[in-house]
Length: 569
Image (cartoon, rainbow, N blue to C red):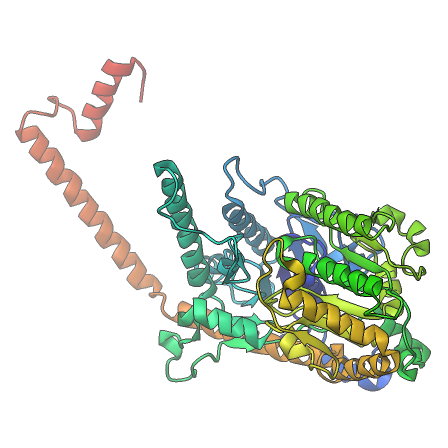
């Protein structure tokens, strides 16, 4: 492998979310480890490289501190290109515009870094064929698949049909049926394009066994060995699993200070916390309904403990229409719940009000609901160090980095029993998994999922000592399986493999190129064929009297053009 390889990361929008966290961790794992010592200098030199990050958008108010200008440690490596390309057209077409933006990003990354050793693309594989087929880059091309894009449409919940669904396509007017057909056709083309472009990757990496199964379901051809590798590769060998890791500020502080305050199994008395982007598929309304059920139990005397406040935090982009709409929906639901129980209405804290929010629910003891938008690392640390229970509501989540962060902070997690959390959370050991069933509007309190969440939260806040022990077991599990050192070692193995695969693919293609002498002979043959075709056509047209006397084919075309246009050709 090249000494200190140049690894170029291509990511669509560098905002706040699990995908962005993963990309930044990959970038940090590529660079020399900051806590390396002299004894490991040789090993650190072998596992350190240079990076460059390409993205179309990185807002200073909606990004991780690592890339926030001007002091973010990764900020000097960030290149913003293609921000002029629209996110969607007047009729929609968000997925199409995203594919075009990714293709332009890949073009710029290749143009600026022709000597790169590895290209890492995630979210959309649109640019992969450009690198592999058009440029025949010697660099290895790795595509990190967080989840198949075709399973992230608005009509499904991570690939599972939602309750709103498509409905009966026979209903409605002819125009509605036509639009649905066109949408299915448009989506089908994009879905097939995703599978085809992903197949060009030298290596495909996924974030969980759950995601790997979904990729196999949607793109089974990716698991078959290529024609040139049929004798060397086994089924699915090109698809690897790399669990995301965490490097939380709490972990760094404990490592630097040599102390571990959370190891004392101290009971937590802080708020109930949820951390997700403000998107409908994150299912945050489920937690609000569970909180409503807990308030009912307290008012009836079925629950005797004091209910902590609820904080709903997450990434919020004011340019994202769904973020704006869903925050409004959640706040309306929260206010209706609080008003019904004669409690103060909900509050919203923006990133600029982080300093003022230190007097919010993180230090209060009474029941309340607050929304914290695009929280900083400092605010994230404050929530992790004070929360008594962490709630993770998405259904069929691909992996879920948030449960790892909470377990690392010794906070037990309540999550849906589906997707990635089934691989990270051990039920009744490091957290509680709740079975999922769709929630019917108007019958939320009868939902088994809502009741399961409410019961799990009530159990955890009623037994603080057992909850603290559960949190400690979660922290140990994170350090053993999902720590940055394990992540870094696995990532470098993948970098070595993809670089070797890229070099092999490049050499194989170059070997298939014809020799210079053969190419010249083939060009002369093609020129001779073209000359014969033109001569034959000219002779035929002259015999038929179509060509003017004394003019060839080109001269006749110029003569007639001057007669029609009155200008020289």
